[in-house]
Length: 446
Ligand code: GLU
Image (cartoon, rainbow, N blue to C red; front, side, top):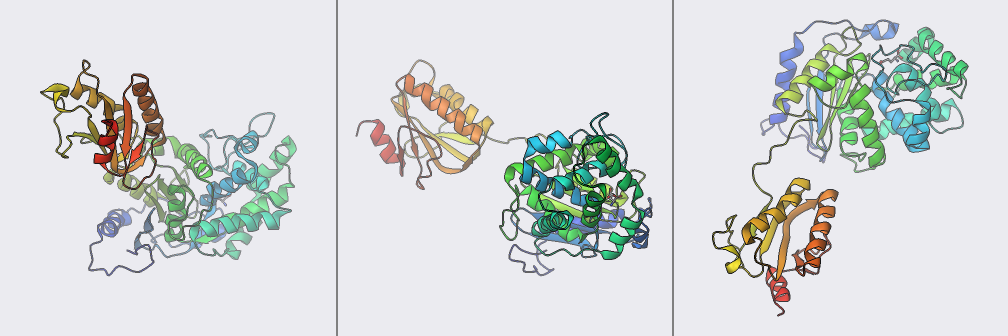
């Protein structure tokens, strides 16, 4: 384990996540199914036993197990990052006009082109990725590749080298990719010479990474485009979200649907055995194990990702069960009051609602209902104090909801003031006070 400052945490210290990765690695290390890719001759030299896992949190902590430092070529894991660059350079609409976002349901190197237009199904299969490189801004193939390498390196937080032998091997044997480029050129969808497009693509696939690099790159996407260790914004948050969306639906070749069902995380795999998966807002994982299944996904990386997702309950559609309300009704002296109140409003002329934690739709929506249950419909309070001292953040939908609630109450003659020692102005009220007593005095006309 390494802390955000890059300091290794001594192994005798508490490292539950590192332990868990190590256990998962052991569990699948003996799974010898699958074959190392050989259609690019140079890839066939990979060690089938190598198996590395790494996890990087959005706050910058790093955990690793096994061969997480062994270099291999990034291959198709480069595709979402090149797509990010195209989105940043020309915008989503222009990219969408040229490359679709529909899962192809076909193999990674299939001729998945729209009849007539030659528009590839999505940017994460070869045809779409070759076209995507041509959308990246630059005067020619050198500059376009330079910009892709720069983005990959900034996401990894170090200058990534290129494996010249793999590049040559792929260039010398990549006739199917060349054919795809020529078909797109003939259909009019590819606007640069076919040879230029595939050359950038072959180079981008030959960039060397480790599982540890992939985890940092995945964490950058998880963190909305901000590198978790350097703090550098390497892409807009919107672009990171768009990339994750396409990874969720198209990232695992013709296994994408089943992957989403079983693992439930945006991901991308590559034929050298690499895989990235992202738990949005939480962390990224990088895995490496060369033997591939018949769809081209690393057998052990898929199994290990599935185990991580299941054990951490990470599936995107997983329901978050809230254990208690994120608001309480408190008396002037700060003691919590029961909901509903047995005595009605008699006890409070100005109720104080204290909110805590991260306020999302569910808590913002429940707060006025809780208040109503307490004071009843018959009595109109003079005003309401909403104490925000213990709130960490408002989700934008909760801000909208509070605006609507405060507006409705104001129209009924009930003014709402807020308390926030830090004066963060998180919601617009009839007044924000640093202390509860001042807010109460204001509403009581003091
Ligand atoms: N460079 C590889 C190819 O185009 C990438 C394939 C992959 O990783 O899916 O064949």
